Image (cartoon, rainbow, N blue to C red):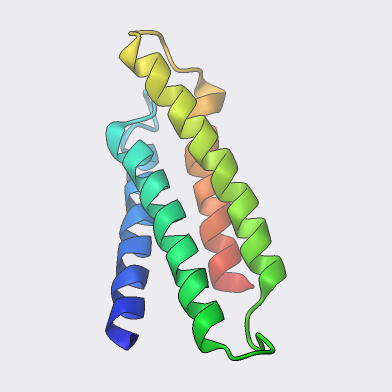
Length: 119
């Protein structure tokens, strides 16, 4: 179980790197890249699996799990995922992605990483 948890943390960090790296790579020409879209899905899936493992191993009282933090990070991630999906749809239709939409993916990712680190 420890290896699975560690592997999921690794994939979760890779998802965050895809989101943040894609944003920084296209900062001057804001768009939502393919890997940002994939990174958002990776973050969601691995995050849910990590919470599931934490709940299974925490015991009956769920001590040590910060449900408020998990809930806030999930809400922020859903906003990131929606922005990434909308941005990718525009890219596929050869429409320009608005600067606000493109920067919201990266900015919210940065906020989510800060919540994970500092809370």
